[in-house]
Amino acid sequence: QILRLLYRIFAEMGFQVYRSREVESDEFNFQLLNFPVGHPARDMQDTYFIESEGRGDNPIVLRTHTSPGQIRAMRAATATNPQDPPPLRIILPGMVYRYEQVDARHETQFDQLEGLAVGTGITFSDLKGTLTCLAQRLFGQNVRTRFRASFFPFTEPSAEFDIECYQCGGKGCAVCGDGWLEIGGGGMVHPAVLSNGGYDPTRYTGFAFGLGAQRIAMLRYG
Image (cartoon, rainbow, N blue to C red; front, side, top):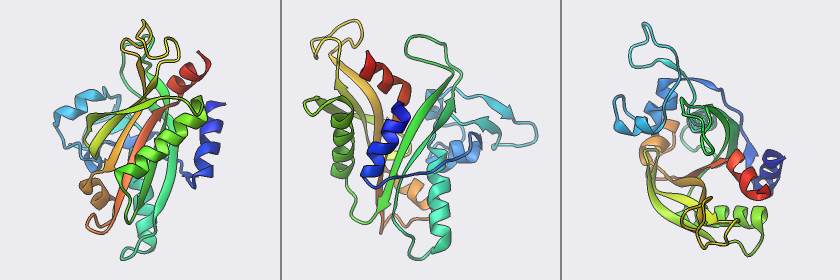
């Protein structure tokens, strides 16, 4: 139900659904998204390796995020017209896999919903407006939101996106700690990622974000 609601909300903002594979190469899951081999940022995503023998620095993995679909979608778009590729506005839903200790906030298999917009003149304010509109559609017009500076290798600048805790109304409780609950993160697409997708970063900009469908369901239904 939550995924269908998210599809509907983003469709009304002009986003199309793009499906991408769950079994990926290290190159697409990490390297083309600005996670070089051996980079410490990889430690944020404990990975299931499926096949590594004889593959050097490009083993086969279960995708740790839906972000590899960004590269595949951009390359599909730029293949039609490399000199003047079309703008993109897509969401990429699907299962992702991480070697996690299962607890109230973590699972080894869960849904993500990625968003990607690429074009000319796209700014961080477009990302902020998109996610604020989403929060209002999900949790009501009066919901309070905030953006916190963060780090992701594939976006720069980057931010975490929070909503006010439904349990305590922002006062702080056992659910949230400080009155806020994270529902996703995002930022402006890193120039290296745009370039790897076939878009000239001197001409094009874009934003990307990732949401946790299970966490949104928990917040929406308590």
